[in-house]
Structure formats: C-alpha cells, structure tokens
Image (cartoon, rainbow, N blue to C red):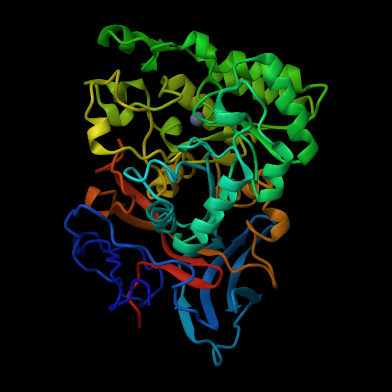
Length: 485
Ligand SMILES: [Zn+2]
C-alpha cells in the first residue's frame, strides 16, 4: 500500500520529528529515516496503479465540510471511489481498511487552482507525475495547471494531451487552465469555446497579463460566453521592463530594477472597469499589493463578479527575503512590504480574498543559481502551503480552520466550476477526495523531503505546524504518513 512497508515512497517525518499531537491515537507514524537527497524523486503512484480498495472507513476525526457547514465528530465510509456514508459510529465490519483519524481534521481534498507543472516542454523542472506527487504530499487532491508550458496550452489538442498524460501518470486530479490568446502573446484570441469543450476549467495568459485593453475586452466578452472565469496575471509590462523585485528601498540598495505596485493595480483597475458592462467572472491571480486589495474590495462591494487569490509567500514574506540576492525569493509578482502582507491577511479575514493558491513554480538549481537579475521568477509551494497558510492566518487568529479549509476547497472549486462535479465538498454519493490533517504536528520543511522535482523555496528549513497526513483521491490512498496497522 502507499506509504506502507512495500512502497518506494519513503514517507516520514524523521524520527526526530515524531508528531507531538495525538492524531490517530495509537497510530504509529512510519518514522523511517529521511531519504538522502537523490537526483530524482521516486516514480509516484498513479490513480491507475494505486491499490483499489473496495471500501475504507475513516473514524473519529473532526469532519469539516465548509460547503454544507458541517463541523462534527463523524466517520466517513468510502466505497468504490465514492462517499458511501457520513455519520456517527458507522459499522466497521465490511471496511477493507480502517483509518483512525482521531484528533485530526477530515476535510474535502484540497484544491490548488494555480500550479505550474511544466509539462509539456519543461520536464527538467517538473512533470505531471512529480508535480502531482508533490501535490498529494501537501494534501491536494486536485490541481489546475497554468498554460505557460512549451508550447502554451492554447489548443484543444494540448488540453486533451494534458488530461490524457495526467490520467496515465498523475497521483491526483489535474485540470488545465487554457491560454486566452494564441501563444499567450496577447495578440490573437485562442479558440475559447473549443478549449472549454476540451475540458479547460478557466482561462489565463499567466506569466503575462493581457497588455492591450482592446484585446482584454475581447477576452472578457468571449470567456463570459463559456461561463468560466478569466484569471489575470496582473502586470502592466510597460512598467516592469527589466524588473527583478519589488520597487523599494531594498531594490535601490541592491541596484536592481524595481517592479512597482502600480503595475499590478493599474491592470486590475482597468479590467474591473472594462468588465463592468460585460460581467465575465474575473479572477485576480497571486494578488500582492495593498492597493490591489482595495480595488478588489470595492469591485466586490459593487456586486461585480470579481475574486482574488493569495499565495503563501505573499502572506508571510517581504522583499527583505531577497536581500543577499537570494534567488529563491525572486517571484512574480514580487514579495512586497509588511503593510502589503498585513493588507492581504486582513483581506482574507474580511472575505475580500476568498481563494488560496500556491503558484507552485518549480525551477532547476542551475536556473536559480544564475545572477539575481537573470534567474527565473517563482518558487515551489505545494508541499508547504497548508502549514504556511495556517501560520499566516490561523495561528494569528484571523480565520478559523473551517474557513481556511473553505479557502482551499469549495471556494477554488467554484472558481473552476468543479463544485458541480462534486469536487470541493464531501457528501454521500460524491467523489471520495479526502484529506486528513493533523493540525498540531510540528515538522520541518526539509530539502530531503521535497517530492517536487525542484527545490526552489525560501521556506526550506522552516519549522511548521500542521500537516496533511493522509490524502485520498477517488477513494484510493495516494499519500499516507502513518504506518499501516
Ligand atoms: Zn502569474
């Protein structure tokens, strides 16, 4: 079984990191030693190769389903990939496997609506296999990959290619967000309706914003016909040429060209005004500035269909992390200042920001070893995100665990139209995508543990609290940190 004695998968914490909490009372953790850092992660199990258990019973956990408002001590029975029952003291007799989740949270499988899995074209950084393996280790059962691959995901054939490849190799559900313009060049519309028919769950030219207001109006009009969301990477390119980090005192001292807040804000303001008469579902990706938050808050209070997502690094770090030319803190949009971090956190607390997304962006060590100005933007996020969100938002008492789970399940499911497929919630008859979280376990995000093919994260070495301990995709155990009993 996955995570069991016969698995290649060396799940742990290390012996020194045995959980302090009593999650799964009596359940021993695997406790094997940390894997030496090797050149490659092991080939991940795929849904097709995960052991097909006819039935599973999860007992004694705190069941939280934000979509229905449920929050109670309940068992969940799973049969043939679906939720068979939710309730108190369900019968154990016919379960093939029983998972003791006492002192843990049992929640809908986490959803990340913004990841870069690099396939096709960037397989030296990540693949659908390695990226999805990292995802299930972070508690995610569904990820939506961005179209800035090589070639860009701008045709129905490429969207179908990703779906087929994911079905063969991925450890979790993978959906595509398609490019809105051909080649993500912002010059010619992609085949918007055909992309939706091929399975695209949204549109974005992520990596770039759509610079032309005329093209943006056309995109909003076409995407509104599909009912899907347009997700904007908000960056006016004429204000950020050659920019490597946030424009402020530190960029000046380091002699680096700055990326000012206004380059993000001006595009959101433009789009909100363009969209006022169109009514497309408009989503701000990886929001980074306090001023952007104000624009989104105002648009939402005006009743516009505008949403925004925040990433772990923008909720915790400032541009000071770039000091010393640390390329693992080079990200786009850039890390800003503490007042921005506070504004983002407050916006999560007051419901202006309703979605959390990692913007998982793997890059090879060679690429991140380049001088700061030449190194690529981005950092990995899937495996550390849950604990980092908890640190920024729950430990600070800004939101509760149930609200955090909503921001990572039903809210992103609605953004991507997945709630209509039963994804993002747990209900009888729906897909059994389930994440079991130990909210109290202390652990260190160590390089040796990373399942992604890349290691670029400024959070490596950070002490964290709270972790997904079991991830179940379509009723199959895709990740399990606890030893089999
Ligand atoms: Zn982006």
